[in-house]
Length: 488
Image 1 (cartoon, rainbow, N blue to C red):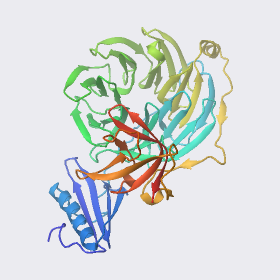
Image 2: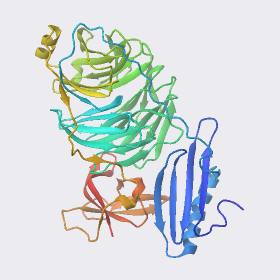
Image 3: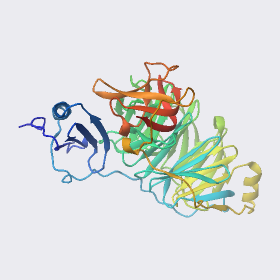
Image 4: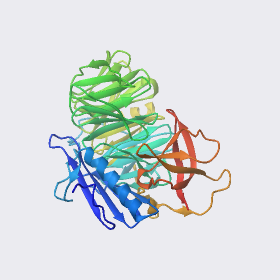
């Protein structure tokens, strides 16, 4: 008897698809309890995502469960025993940090210690974000006040922004949207993809991985295209309207944004360890102590910025007027656009694993888990080179700091019993279409053909939710802002 036959109320079917060659490594579990069918799925070794559907009769529930199981069996899934097959390991970047050889220390205005090595950073007009290897993401003001704490299930590899939406890519293979009141998993990366770095542009997620692969996924978490570059260890991916720029051990490769082909490839001086972009150029920090500026149009190396150790991170001021770099020896640098070094200073707290410049300040996150705000104004740097630096404020957590964890089930969502008055919320509905659950806007005034990027963990056919606000995005879809409440 196949796994899709003989369904009984109160039973569970557990399937796995695992390829020894290093491909898929995931599970799919279906449980029937009376008229309710629950599905749990994800990477082997993690709890996974959950969906629950209710049916009018036990017979229809069994039929729906049998259909789901049969679809997975046709795709190669087979019955298995949960726990017998181990989770596939996820690569965490191994870095070393030596003491700085700079004669002076950077003028750090304030420093916030997160408690674990930190790779994720994003700075905008209003906030500073930092994410560490314990899965903690903190939101701070530019003055160093800690405003919120997000507790994600696994280590944060990077933080990226798309307009005013903030996303965290984690070691559990998911990308979490931190823009709503409560975070949720917006993308689920394929189990065979070992994420190294991410970028999001117009709702399209670009994933660079351990094997030198590049995977492009749309806002509905559906694969658009993928490529394998000539190198491995893809620690750089940047995207714009024209192309996706992929940095790896063999250099930087540019692909057409629609996946139609390779535009150019440039062999860099050393393996790429970090990437940055401006409108007309991409910047690659490498293991051979340089940052190189490549023209987006051709891949031509326009300038080289020489450091004294392997470059872990880089950034620029607007337009590329100044170029900044952080090395493996706890130093930060500033160069002119044409490559002249202006200064080198010690960080005072480990090597900068990521960095961003904003309004004459250089923000770095480091191997010791700190988010540090450096005064990068000309006056402050000149004073630091002469030995005069401010006493850095040591930022502390407030006792009543709110902590937000991701939505995991529909039961974790607050409910409302009435459609809100006009202007007080937007109603959306989950609809099954083509074997997938889509989310459409029910309220008037929105384009009815557009889907909503919505938490997969709470998508249930027929369920309706009220959200504070929806905003349209390039590419023809909506994204959530504010709280999500179930309409019952």
